[in-house]
Image (cartoon, rainbow over all chains, first blue to last red; front, side, top):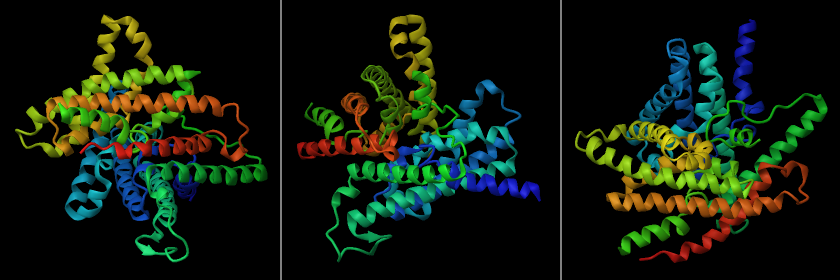
Length: 228
Length: 193
């Protein structure tokens, strides 16, 4: 019974408290690049979730065999393997989505979220917990980028998932589906998330931990640590 | 020659990696707080990008293509880049310690910089020749440099501004990046036929 509760909290952890996009600020490149449409966000999220779950599972299974010194190249190879699987599956079954997402599918390899979870969670926990963590983080990422995609699509094209929504009410502002709109929407959504988290914090008086402790290379948080 | 020039201008301004292709956002947001760190990071990125473009092009052309192993591109490229960065680090440490001192801390972070892998994937997609691929890498690195240094100036100014609490930190940075990105959209009309 207790274990079940633990797994549930691991799952929801990724969606709300440690939402990779809005709270940990990981994986910014795909969150900004492919979110011109809600559908693309959903597709990208699903692809990343697959890689996340797969690599978490494998890394958790081999965590005791891999020597600490070579763990980073091993992790990268595992992640790259799953990325290739996703790439081939998409090319075979969803060629249109594959075309839209373009080079951002192979770029899942260098997505900080996946590496950070491998380093922070999968290599310290058993396979079941690692899979649940992958699912939770993946769901959080998918929700976040689908939300960004929805906002951008509605404001920028007047449609949602391809269905016309506000096209008749106002002229869509094309800016939102162009690169600057990505930065803008992301900025405002993070601010909104901060505001909500702030309100919650003052209610419950809990200490909110921000930032990624993994120090995954290339990630902004790791850099701040490096500077100090 | 004309094509090379078009690639150069295109990759620096028109399809700026950071501001229009969203590649290398993490270091862009991470190290743009101070102009000095921005310069160091950009130097390391240009250096590694030129090298990695050359090496990955050779790997792709002489190893993957003849054996029809193109489906291994992602794995091959990321491992090539990772080991290249490691190698550069070791060589620089031994041979040119002064340069290592300047770039050293930024090197390990470059492996996961999507700009490096992204440009490798793009030259495959666009079928560039060796020279074109290297020029493209160099230009993309310069574009990254330009965006990073310009933006670090903007951010230094932001430090002293009165910002609503919820916007402090990342949100206001992203809004500022959006404005810089709008400015770069002006270059879109530069496209050379």
